[in-house]
Image 1: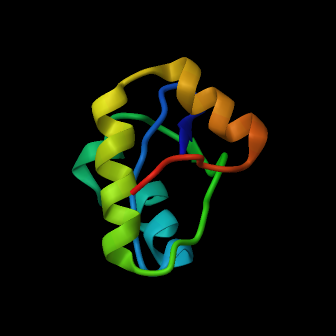
Image 2: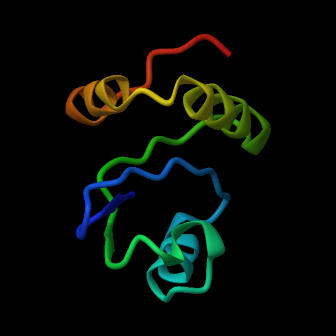
Length: 81
């Protein structure tokens, strides 16, 4: 997700994207509440939630906007789990 206010990016994982996105947009999630209005810029399905969470952790450790922007542009996460 991306903040429309300051273009900050948020990386997360869930088993129900639609519900989780509504939860974030409604301001019910501490981690994104301060971001203001959000938009979904990219999502990718994985075989299990465990794989998704492993990828999420690796992406959060990178903390590199240029890498996240490349993923958004290419519409694919290319990472070994």
